Length: 114
Image (cartoon, rainbow, N blue to C red; front, top):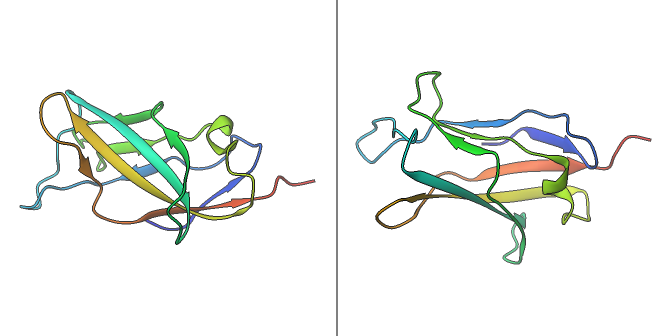
């Protein structure tokens, strides 16, 4: 999932809307019984820069997508350098093991306009 662009210090920008399917290709119902976390690193790096747990919502997929990551200005506070970042999205069920979103999620953070 590429093409998301945000500006440091601004809340404007699109929410990341994801379609997450199981191994059989069926849309997973994330409407209840799941929590989410998004771990952010610089692209091609391993150092964790931030973890987001708020404003990540799951649904049944009735709108065509079943997970939405809605970014806030504070989510980018720990990202001091404009650039491209990678997000590891993890869904954790009430009972069972966490699972990671199967495709890379990236976004570009640009300096705030002057």
